[in-house]
Picture 1: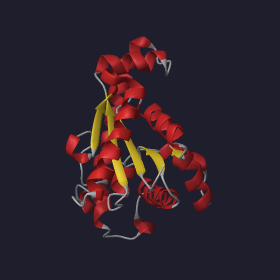
Picture 2: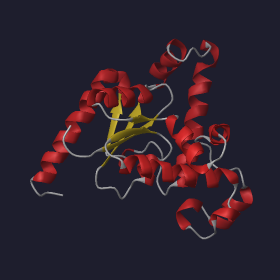
Picture 3: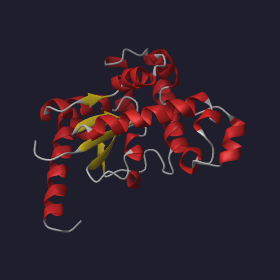
Picture 4: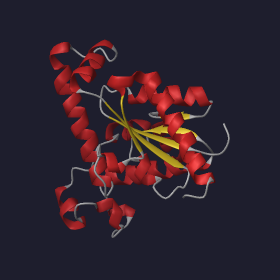
Length: 214
């Protein structure tokens, strides 16, 4: 692989976004980060990994903090980290971890607002993986072993949690096509097809840049 590219993967629950990210990393021979970020953040900060896991992709529940800071509290930087709710402190620590692993070279990062954290990185390629609900329910049952009668509710609740997290910590909207460089329907083209399209998009992007268009 020539040059540095940081791939970030946003995903609907059950869309296979995590598998797309892992397959992409394996094909390119670059690091893959998902829950691995929690362990690195815990080690660097000296805090418990369980603490990061509990707060993983969850926005703060502090109503007062939301009222004080407005719709996008993390974007304002109006108060110090010591005054922030715990989830927000953990988000900032994890953001530092995201920047740390991306500074080390090409990699794939799943979720955790990584595309927003790295929004100023010129080598960023952000992707969102989605699929029809029926496809996601099927995957939840067959891959994640979710009880069939609870699969649809599980998908919808997970998506709501991810949307709340992303919308709270960024000034963008989770899942909207304009938020990402590339949006793919895994139900239509499959996991391998998504990986193929991401790589094709990257090559087109590099070609476009080399021609001086960006």
